[in-house]
Image (cartoon, rainbow, N blue to C red; front, side):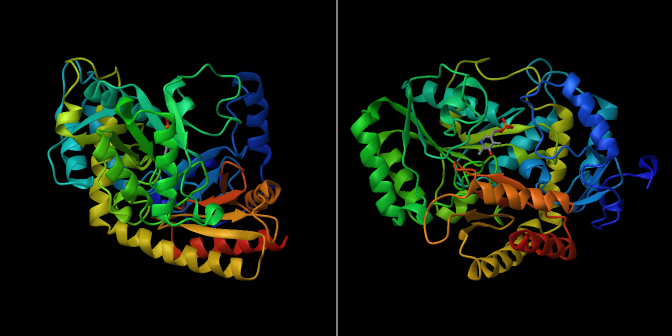
Length: 446
Ligand SMILES: *Cc1c(COP(=O)(O)O)cnc(C)c1O
């Protein structure tokens, strides 16, 4: 199919179709140009160049149609080039593209803030600030917590991923490739043990007791500004903490005046079958960081939380040139409309049931699959050497590579790089979802 007749969104045929080897000749030509023009540490997972995307597929520059189990890292949750997003963006872009909210503001920013106040857990008064990337949201949440508490220290967890800026690199756990060679990092940081039921066999309260004992042994709680945690870890391996872990930490934070920040950048915005994964844990964070799925692919992030904390810093202390760009705000409002009007929370749960069913079935006959975990459309399998907890990163990488060669976009993750994660868009058909899972099954055999 010639590239010129392709348009994205749901008009794309919803099929897996391979017309060349993966990558095809046009992608190979672009890869050669990439090597001479783009900094090499910016390294694509699959050197397959996109021409269009929508529903559950990405079509490449050779006309191959790939099943999308990656969503551009959990971003295009409502679908790629989703019609509501396209329409809202086109209308906004034709009216104005930027004024800087901190110079001459506009209503779209306020509407996003109003909607996020409704959608995030907790029915107290809230405020929101908008930024561009997830890392920027996390940095701002820490700034806000430090100002409010007049304390410096930050508590984070094993396997955490919070971004790639200097502060958020420090907060991120995994050395390779995220941190090696990029220091020095802030010393105001303590990393506690995460609840990881597959590996530690602890209940939530037991794991929380362990983490709290570590924190209290290392730091005076009166010096801790905030504790930052992903309710389901993302890059760190889709680790779902044991029930009660998050709630015990949240209670400890409240008792010690520590701001509890849920980093919902990957788990939020309908991905797990609820608006935010904190809800499953029965916790109400003081602050929530939001990005990825919030704006259908446009760069937007947010910190939403308790009014008294968010309002504390000096006027002008928060902001940024592009933060809450009007086009990104228009996209976010369309995403929030679609989640409601298209019943996407229920759809995420349906997808979750299909994924869990198939993944557990694979696990039943394959001792290399140590664990199947996740919620809704955020699920993963962790590979180990049979009968042990020893990670098998080579297998995870081989499975993903096989899937790529068969036209399925599949990502790995995990502190030990031994996890394959599935992040399909909520706009994927059951047929494509099943076909992608069939290929995962073939990968396990191959
Ligand atoms: C992706 C991610 C970030 C960083 O977001 P960027 O937009 O890449 O800066 C932070 N926290 C979590 C949980 C993430 O998944």
